Length: 187
Image 1 (cartoon, helix red, strand yellow):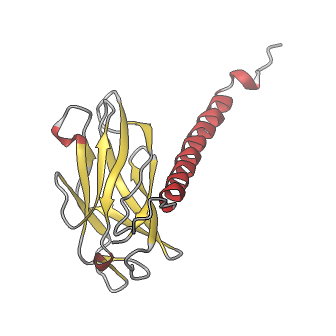
Image 2: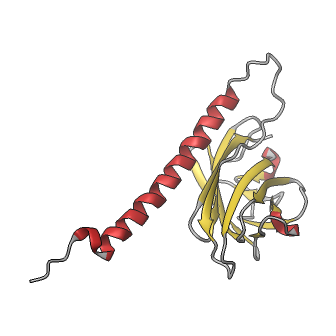
Protein backbone atom coordinates (compact mmCIF):
# COMPACT_ATOMS: atom_id res chain seq x y z
CA UNK A 1 0.00 0.00 0.00
CA UNK A 2 1.74 3.23 -1.18
CA UNK A 3 1.95 6.12 1.24
CA UNK A 4 2.36 9.72 0.01
CA UNK A 5 5.04 11.67 1.78
CA UNK A 6 4.46 15.33 2.55
CA UNK A 7 8.03 15.96 1.41
CA UNK A 8 7.22 14.77 -2.12
CA UNK A 9 3.80 16.33 -2.49
CA UNK A 10 3.32 19.48 -4.54
CA UNK A 11 1.74 21.19 -1.53
CA UNK A 12 5.04 21.03 0.36
CA UNK A 13 6.88 22.72 -2.49
CA UNK A 14 4.26 25.46 -2.81
CA UNK A 15 4.63 26.31 0.85
CA UNK A 16 8.39 26.59 0.30
CA UNK A 17 7.91 29.05 -2.57
CA UNK A 18 5.55 31.20 -0.50
CA UNK A 19 7.99 31.16 2.41
CA UNK A 20 10.89 32.14 0.13
CA UNK A 21 8.90 35.01 -1.41
CA UNK A 22 7.90 36.24 2.05
CA UNK A 23 11.52 36.16 3.22
CA UNK A 24 12.64 38.19 0.18
CA UNK A 25 10.06 40.90 0.97
CA UNK A 26 11.04 40.93 4.66
CA UNK A 27 14.76 41.27 3.81
CA UNK A 28 14.01 44.14 1.40
CA UNK A 29 11.98 46.01 4.05
CA UNK A 30 14.64 45.47 6.74
CA UNK A 31 17.34 46.70 4.34
CA UNK A 32 15.34 49.83 3.51
CA UNK A 33 14.72 50.63 7.18
CA UNK A 34 18.41 50.08 7.98
CA UNK A 35 19.53 52.33 5.15
CA UNK A 36 17.06 55.02 6.21
CA UNK A 37 18.31 54.84 9.81
CA UNK A 38 21.98 55.02 8.82
CA UNK A 39 21.30 57.90 6.48
CA UNK A 40 19.57 59.84 9.26
CA UNK A 41 22.76 59.65 11.36
CA UNK A 42 24.36 62.66 9.71
CA UNK A 43 27.77 62.73 11.41
CA UNK A 44 29.54 65.09 9.00
CA UNK A 45 28.33 68.20 10.85
CA UNK A 46 26.95 69.61 7.61
CA UNK A 47 23.25 70.48 7.43
CA UNK A 48 21.20 68.37 5.07
CA UNK A 49 19.39 70.36 2.42
CA UNK A 50 17.84 67.34 0.77
CA UNK A 51 17.91 63.63 1.29
CA UNK A 52 18.09 61.28 -1.67
CA UNK A 53 15.77 58.32 -1.89
CA UNK A 54 17.63 55.21 -0.70
CA UNK A 55 17.34 51.85 -2.32
CA UNK A 56 17.08 48.10 -2.14
CA UNK A 57 16.77 45.57 -4.91
CA UNK A 58 15.32 42.18 -5.57
CA UNK A 59 15.31 39.65 -8.39
CA UNK A 60 11.95 38.65 -9.79
CA UNK A 61 10.66 36.50 -12.58
CA UNK A 62 9.76 38.61 -15.57
CA UNK A 63 6.12 38.74 -16.54
CA UNK A 64 6.98 39.60 -20.12
CA UNK A 65 8.04 37.23 -22.85
CA UNK A 66 11.66 37.56 -21.72
CA UNK A 67 13.14 34.37 -20.30
CA UNK A 68 15.54 36.10 -17.89
CA UNK A 69 15.12 37.72 -14.53
CA UNK A 70 14.61 41.44 -13.94
CA UNK A 71 16.72 42.92 -11.15
CA UNK A 72 15.18 46.34 -10.64
CA UNK A 73 16.69 48.80 -8.17
CA UNK A 74 15.60 52.24 -6.98
CA UNK A 75 18.72 54.35 -7.64
CA UNK A 76 17.61 57.79 -6.49
CA UNK A 77 14.73 60.20 -6.51
CA UNK A 78 13.42 63.66 -5.83
CA UNK A 79 9.98 64.07 -4.28
CA UNK A 80 9.00 67.73 -4.02
CA UNK A 81 6.56 68.47 -1.18
CA UNK A 82 4.77 71.08 -3.30
CA UNK A 83 3.77 68.34 -5.79
CA UNK A 84 2.01 66.16 -3.18
CA UNK A 85 -1.09 67.76 -1.63
CA UNK A 86 -4.31 66.57 -0.02
CA UNK A 87 -6.10 68.78 -2.56
CA UNK A 88 -4.22 67.13 -5.45
CA UNK A 89 -6.11 65.38 -8.23
CA UNK A 90 -3.71 62.77 -9.62
CA UNK A 91 -3.05 59.24 -8.37
CA UNK A 92 -1.19 58.20 -11.51
CA UNK A 93 2.35 58.49 -12.82
CA UNK A 94 4.04 58.15 -16.18
CA UNK A 95 7.44 56.72 -17.03
CA UNK A 96 10.13 58.51 -19.00
CA UNK A 97 13.81 58.49 -19.87
CA UNK A 98 14.84 61.65 -18.00
CA UNK A 99 14.22 63.26 -14.62
CA UNK A 100 11.53 65.94 -14.56
CA UNK A 101 9.89 67.37 -11.41
CA UNK A 102 9.19 64.74 -8.76
CA UNK A 103 10.58 61.36 -9.75
CA UNK A 104 11.97 57.98 -8.69
CA UNK A 105 14.88 56.66 -10.80
CA UNK A 106 14.87 52.92 -11.51
CA UNK A 107 17.52 50.68 -13.05
CA UNK A 108 17.51 47.05 -14.17
CA UNK A 109 20.72 45.03 -14.08
CA UNK A 110 18.98 41.75 -14.92
CA UNK A 111 18.34 40.06 -18.25
CA UNK A 112 14.52 40.31 -18.17
CA UNK A 113 12.14 43.27 -18.38
CA UNK A 114 10.53 44.64 -15.21
CA UNK A 115 7.01 46.07 -15.37
CA UNK A 116 6.02 48.64 -12.71
CA UNK A 117 2.37 48.22 -11.68
CA UNK A 118 2.20 50.60 -8.70
CA UNK A 119 4.15 52.88 -6.36
CA UNK A 120 3.16 53.41 -2.74
CA UNK A 121 4.09 56.44 -0.65
CA UNK A 122 3.87 56.19 3.15
CA UNK A 123 3.64 59.63 4.72
CA UNK A 124 2.26 60.89 8.03
CA UNK A 125 0.66 57.54 8.90
CA UNK A 126 -1.15 57.06 5.58
CA UNK A 127 -0.30 54.96 2.54
CA UNK A 128 -1.24 56.32 -0.89
CA UNK A 129 -1.08 54.21 -4.06
CA UNK A 130 -0.14 55.54 -7.50
CA UNK A 131 -0.62 53.55 -10.72
CA UNK A 132 0.94 54.00 -14.16
CA UNK A 133 -0.83 55.87 -16.91
CA UNK A 134 0.20 53.43 -19.66
CA UNK A 135 3.04 50.91 -19.54
CA UNK A 136 6.07 51.41 -17.34
CA UNK A 137 8.75 48.94 -18.43
CA UNK A 138 12.33 48.85 -17.15
CA UNK A 139 14.33 47.10 -19.87
CA UNK A 140 17.08 44.53 -19.41
CA UNK A 141 20.73 45.50 -18.94
CA UNK A 142 22.27 46.90 -22.11
CA UNK A 143 19.04 48.34 -23.55
CA UNK A 144 18.07 52.02 -23.78
CA UNK A 145 15.24 51.49 -21.28
CA UNK A 146 17.55 49.99 -18.60
CA UNK A 147 17.16 53.24 -16.63
CA UNK A 148 13.61 54.51 -16.31
CA UNK A 149 12.06 57.35 -14.31
CA UNK A 150 8.71 57.18 -12.51
CA UNK A 151 7.40 60.74 -13.02
CA UNK A 152 4.76 62.17 -10.68
CA UNK A 153 2.36 64.98 -11.54
CA UNK A 154 2.64 68.43 -9.95
CA UNK A 155 -0.92 67.78 -8.73
CA UNK A 156 -0.34 64.39 -7.04
CA UNK A 157 -2.84 63.56 -4.29
CA UNK A 158 -1.85 62.33 -0.83
CA UNK A 159 -4.12 61.75 2.15
CA UNK A 160 -2.13 64.44 4.02
CA UNK A 161 -0.24 67.25 2.28
CA UNK A 162 3.52 66.66 2.26
CA UNK A 163 5.92 69.02 3.99
CA UNK A 164 9.57 69.63 3.13
CA UNK A 165 11.92 67.52 5.24
CA UNK A 166 9.20 65.02 6.13
CA UNK A 167 10.27 61.37 6.03
CA UNK A 168 8.65 59.30 3.29
CA UNK A 169 8.93 55.58 2.60
CA UNK A 170 7.34 53.39 0.01
CA UNK A 171 7.53 50.58 -2.48
CA UNK A 172 7.86 50.26 -6.23
CA UNK A 173 5.72 47.22 -7.06
CA UNK A 174 6.46 45.05 -10.10
CA UNK A 175 4.06 42.84 -12.04
CA UNK A 176 5.58 39.67 -10.54
CA UNK A 177 4.63 40.95 -7.07
CA UNK A 178 8.09 42.10 -5.99
CA UNK A 179 8.12 45.20 -3.78
CA UNK A 180 11.26 47.35 -3.94
CA UNK A 181 11.51 49.46 -0.79
CA UNK A 182 12.78 53.03 -0.71
CA UNK A 183 13.04 55.78 1.91
CA UNK A 184 13.91 59.46 1.96
CA UNK A 185 12.49 62.91 2.67
CA UNK A 186 10.27 65.32 0.81
CA UNK A 187 12.21 68.30 -0.57
